[in-house]
Amino acid sequence: MTNNQKLKVLAAILFVLIIVLIGMLIYATTIHKNDDKPASNTADVSTTASSTNAVQPGQSSTSEEAGTIDLKLYKYDAEDYDKPKEIVTVPVDKKLYEDDITAAINKLLETTGLSIKKAVVSGELLTVDLSKEIEAKFNMGSAGGITNTNILAATLVNLPGINKLEVTVDGVAGVEGDHFSFNGTFVKADGDKSYEFTSSGRVSK
Image (cartoon, rainbow, N blue to C red; front, side, top):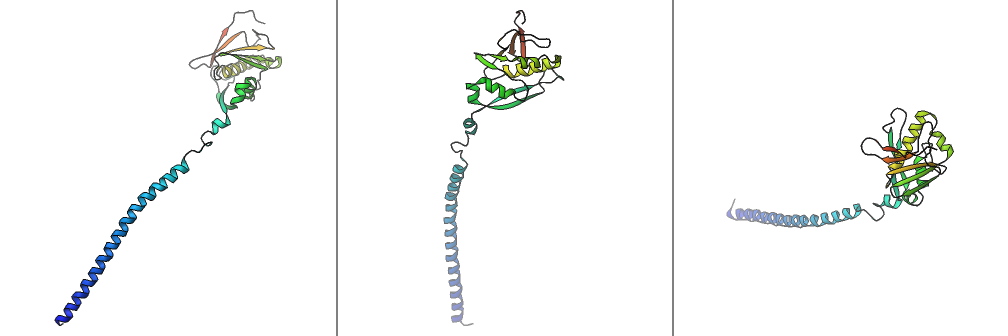
């Protein structure tokens, strides 16, 4: 190979190397620019995701808008008079509870066979009036008397804002039967018991 030919080969190799270097520089510059863009896009995506997942007005306040209040129904049976067999949460319209507590209590009791004629709240004391027909359910054997008394008393003394309960029958206070006594006050209790009963000491009716 002549010197001339060698020079041509060297020139060709140098040319190819220059082209390769220029190509690598362009590639490196492009990659650098793309590296900057995702960071900004990621921020955009995060912002979008954040705004999509953000709680919109009306979504988080569903329970508030529904306006319900969770009341507790204490269920008892003859197997254990001291402890409730089950405590069921019953959602009741909050406005109904505030405006017509009689209707709210009847909704709470509707699965028990018990109901009230009227309810009056005075501070922490709730007074409910029963009909003669409902009173008869408390006198259907000792088990029926204790079970129904437990359901009524435990449920009502544990209503929000209530600590005491008095029961009348057709407007008459101090009524007693063979298997029950409303001649006193039911009071919310601490510990295992749901309520305690304090006799009034009056002559029963």
